[in-house]
Amino acid sequence: MKQQIFFLAIICTLGGCDKTPDTAGYYRAVTFVNVHAASFLKSELLKYDYGLRQQYIRSTGDTAVYRALFRADDNRLLVLFGKPGWQAFAAQFRIPLDTNAGWTRLVLHLDSTNFRFDLEIHTYPDSVINADTIKVSLYTSGDYSVPVNLMEDPIAYLSRLDEERRKYGVGTYNKLRTGGIMELNFSPTDYLLYFPTDFRIGEQQFQDSWNKKLKSGKKLHDNWYYYKRDKPLD
Image (cartoon, rainbow, N blue to C red):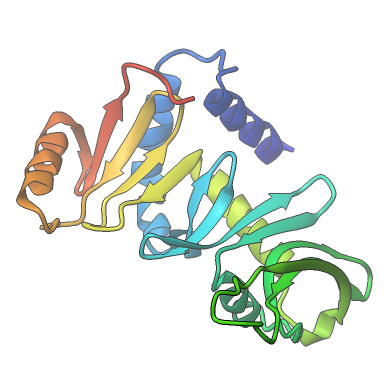
């Protein structure tokens, strides 16, 4: 119950309904650095970015592999896939489904003995009429069932990630694709930046910009710097 109340407080903060003093976000950030930062840097959470609207986003480089939205109220998982994403998701959780087509969207829930898949899949025509024919995606949907003992549990996995994120007091977070810099938000205005030791960014103008950003922050510990925005996040 205490965790639920704490999570609600964070959501309200990020959504603009925070009634706590202005210092609350700062103290959450300080607590994170002092208590949780070392564990966070070793966490499975770092395989993802997290946003309030899209929730858990797994990427390769600049390409989103899949987006997973966990609905705790009815224990369902909605997954939206990038073009190669369904294969990565199926491999990650050892899902033994061969649809012979790509997955676009998945709604997953669990009954007592089976995972239930509501899949939107797409395929292409096997033949073309002539060289000018445009291949058009054919979208269909299908319902599938897999016994619980034949695959890993994506719902339990995302639920554990969410519990861990809430334990750390982190609202949203994301990683830069270069330089290893991370941003963690603790309120609409209070956030931390993590700068790896001797971080490097390819283009000098961006390196100079981030060096300036680092120096403008309040150093809390080693690679962690605190900042406060003039305007809150949407």
